[in-house]
Amino acid sequence: MGKLFELDPVGPYSLAASVRFLEGFAPAAYRGDGTDRLRLAFVADGLSNDERIAGVSVRQEDGVVIGEVFGEADVGVVERQVARILSLDVNGSGFPEVGRRDPVVGKRQRRYPGLRPVCFHSPYEAAAWAIIGHRVRIVQAARVKARMAEELGPKVRVDGKILSAFPGPSRLAGLTGFPGLTETKLKRLRHLAVAAGEGKLEANLLRPLPVEEALSQLQELPGIGPFSAELILLRGAGEPDHLPAHEPRLARAVARAYGLEETPGIEVLKEISENWRPYRTWITLHLRATLEEETGEIAGKPRTSKKKKLNADR
Image 1 (cartoon, rainbow, N blue to C red):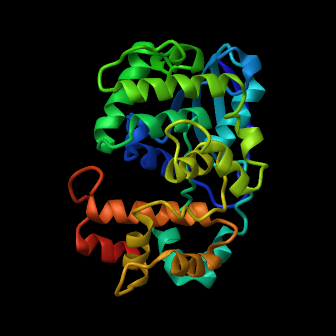
Image 2: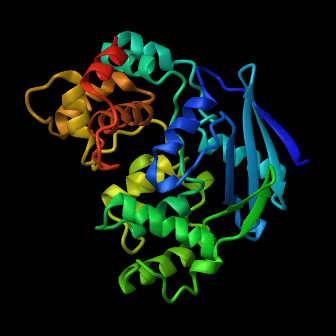
C-alpha cells in the first residue's frame, strides 16, 4: 500500500468529470477502467527529486480527493503536483457566480458539473507536447508521445498495473532519434531538456510571474511561439485566469455558444471574457470541450447529436 494524502476542494469539483475529460483528451492518451478512479504516472516536480517517478491512484470520497502514492518521489511533492494537475490548488468557490452572471457559462457549468481543467503533469511535459505536435494532427502527435512514454519513460506499478511516465529531461537531453520526430523536433526537445534541467520550466516559478512576463520567457525556448507559450502556462503551470488569445478554436467556440453571426476577433473575445474573471482559463476549457463534443474535429468524428446537444444545454 502506498502513502496517502487528502485534498479538500474549495468550490465545485468532480473527479469523475476529470476522468471523463482525460479519456477524451488526446495528449493524455488516458484509458480509464470504467470507474471514477484516476491513475497517473509522472516525473515528480523539482530538480532536487532527481527525476523520480511518481505513481498515484486518486479517488473521491464524500467530496474529499484521496491520493495513494507509489514510487520513490516525496509524498508532499506529489500532493502539490496532483493538486495543480487537477486544478485543486485554485479556490473555485466563486466559479458558480460566473455562471449566474453569464447564462452561457451557466449552461456549460450544468453540462459539465464539477469540471476543472486537467493539466499536463508539468510545464516541461506541456512544452514537449507543443514541440511534438507542431504541424501534425493531434491524434498522430498523441501516438508519438504515448510511444515515447512506453519506450523511453520510467515505469511504476499503481494498483497492480504498470504505468509509464513521459521521459524526464535527462532522457530527452541525449535523444538522437525517434520514429515520428523530425531532426528539427529532436533538436528542440534537446534544448527543452536543457532548459528544464536549469529550472526554467518549474511551475512554482512560472505561475507567480505576471502573465506577459511568463509568456515572454517561455517564447525564448526554441520552437515555442505564442500559442505554445500559452499552452505551457495555462495547461502546464495551471494559470487559472488568462484568455488564450492564440487558441485558434476558441473564437469559433465562442461564436457557437453565444450565437454570434461572425467569428469574433480578439477585442470582442476580450470584452466577452471580462465576465469570466477570475476563471477565464476554466471557461475556455468548457467552451472548447463543447465545441469538440459537437463537432468531433479533433477525434475525427461527431460525438454528440444536435438533439443531445440541445438537451444538454437545457
